[in-house]
Length: 144
Image: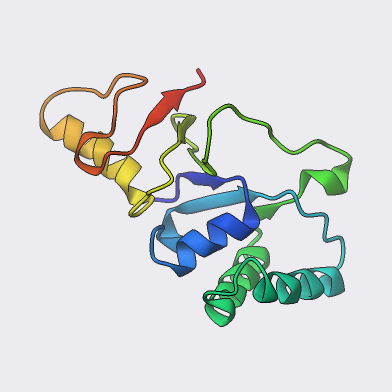
């Protein structure tokens, strides 16, 4: 079930390409890009391949293209809106359902957030805002 919202096209695509996040878990990415045309998207992806995605450029480009093609990339700057500025440190994923931000830079898989909830539920308990996602060590905070 897609529940994750990303806040950095380059970082989120890197996470997906590296296997830290499953593509199927991604609901959308709210990017800071402002690529208004198909040509701009192609040029932007080409630029990111050489810089932000240098570790896995071809796979990252395919992932980015798919995100755009499936309408999963939002670009608020194209509408004159500011991009989200959220508290936290090195984060770029949020659980779109609970609005909890993943702040751990060591996400082994974005499904860890979902799995943490499932793990707590299996124990007959609920994870409270601010509690760690236990089996995966994913720190989360509640913006609520």
